[in-house]
Image (cartoon, rainbow, N blue to C red; front, side):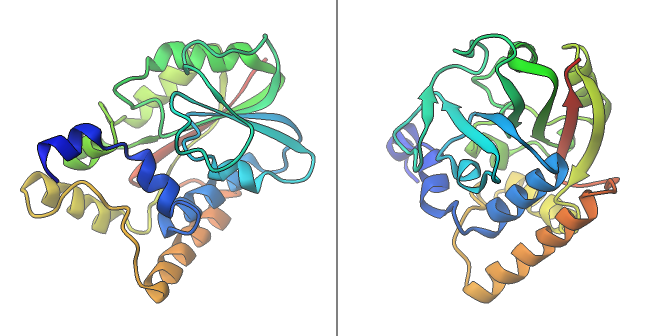
Length: 237
């Protein structure tokens, strides 16, 4: 990719093109719903990108997405806005998600979590996902707009300092952790680039989707001790 192409590139175009069926995005959506469990009421997905999560909202959930850029939105409703200045009244939502948002270079993580806390109703739940292990930071993160990766205690502190009660704090994308970590390090050596959202042959895509589906089933009741991603489920009082 040339310098001019990089300047014009928006990774959300890849998410819009491949996100409905790509194994990682499908699998992580299943992990999201596994941690949230039974949900009802209004759901806000901060930094929703194309909005694929909204298409899987269970019965009884009215979902809306928010993103800075609406060009690649594939569903409705999606509202244009900033994560740290949510255009909603206090205590509007029963569920708020921020998936691979808090690490973004353009996002004020503390202000975003505080805003999520503000718009959550009492007893509402906040689910956030970030990349784990700062030691793995490199071209992959830069490609996807990430400015940081989190340590587990640091991530938990970010959520609790906003006044939310942490209920779950677990790793995910764990079964492929060693392979994924190796690819991150290889990218730092120039062997691979940062883009890992490429279409795969159907059998491989099916197999990898199955691995993350197994993780989703495990995470319904158990945590992982290592993984490429960290997820925190918290509750508003």
